[in-house]
Length: 84
Image 1 (cartoon, rainbow, N blue to C red):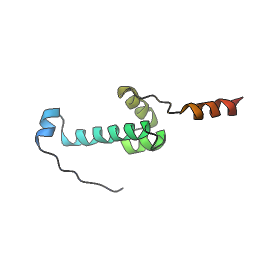
Image 2: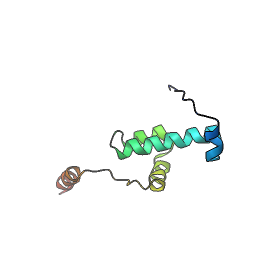
Image 3: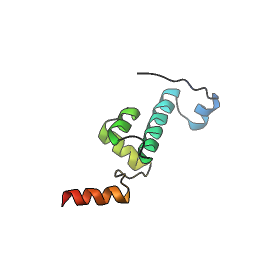
Image 4: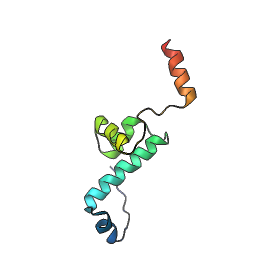
């Protein structure tokens, strides 16, 4: 696994009332949710990025008010055509 380093003012952690480790985990989840919402990654890959199980990631989607289903109208029509 690769790691990256970002520098933030110490005040960020106190303002958010979060320990650095908790902040990092929250950033991973937020990034994974956004990338999933934008269609950049699959649900499984997003869960991996977030460090969560698939069920845990689905719960995170609900917390961020992001739909579990990320289909365009065309993709949904194709799925429905394939089923019938």
